[in-house]
Image (cartoon, rainbow, N blue to C red; front, side, top):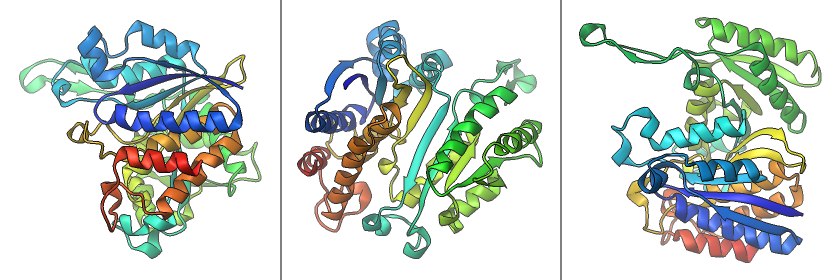
Length: 360
C-alpha cells in the first residue's frame, strides 16, 4: 500500500518527537511492505518566522493532497501577544477546518507499568481504558459572532457556542460506531441544565441512539464528568463531547495515563477516493518550548499518533498493533523519559525511539 503522508514538525519539542515517530513509521512500513511517501511542511510559529503566516498556502495544499498529516505541536511564547491571525494556533485551527476533520479521537489508557507515574492512587487508575470523541469544527472555537469590541468600562468580549443538528448527528454516529467496537457504552457530555445548545445536543444524541440499541447511553453533565474521570475512570468506555468540553476533559484525563506526553490523537473527516480517511494525527501535548532541543521530550504520544494513523487513516490494524506492542514493551523495559518518573536515569527522546525500532 502507498502511504502519502505530510509531516509538520511544528514548534518547540514538535520536531524532536516527530522525528522519532517518523522513524517508527518507516520501520513499520518496511516490515509490512508498504511504500512510504513523505513530504515535510511548515506550520505554527516556525511558519510565521519563515513566511509570515501560521498556515502557508504550500502547507495547506500539501495537506489537501496527502492521505494523512502527522503534526508535532504548535505554539511559541514570542507570539503570545500577537493578534489572533498571527498566532501559531491559528494555523492548526485553519488546517482542521480546511481538512474537514470533525471528529477528534483521544484514547486514554493506564499502562500497568506507569501506574506509579500518575498522581492518583494505583487502585483508582488501574484498568482505565477509555476513548474521548470530541467534536472538532464547531462550538465556541468557531462560532460567530465573536471578537472584542468597545473601550473602557464598555469593552466586551464575545464568543458563541453554536451547533446544528447535522453537526451533532455526525459526531454522535462516529462515537456510537466506535462504542460498538469496544465495550458498547457511551457517555454523552453536556451542560443541559444551563445551556440551550446542550439541550439540543442531548435531544439529538437521544435520536441517534435509537439507531444503536446495542450501545448503552448515559448522559452526564460536564462538571460531574470532570469529577468522575478522577473518582472512577473505569466507568467510562467512549466519552462523546462538544469541542471545548472535550479539549478540557481530554487534558484532565492525561493524569490517568501518567503524563500528557503519553496521549495520542486522531482527527478524522471523510473518506478519500484512495480509501483513506481525511486525517490529522498529533500528540495531545503542547510544544513545551522550555524542553526544546534538549532530547528530553517524551515521543510516545507522537508514536501513538502514528498507530492511530495506521488504524483509523488506512485501516492497517496489524501495523497499528505492532506499534502499540512496541510501546508496551518499551515501557515494561523501563526506557522512560523524565516525565514518567523512571527509577534510574531518564531516557533521552532518541533512546526511546531506538528502543521502539528494536521492538518492531
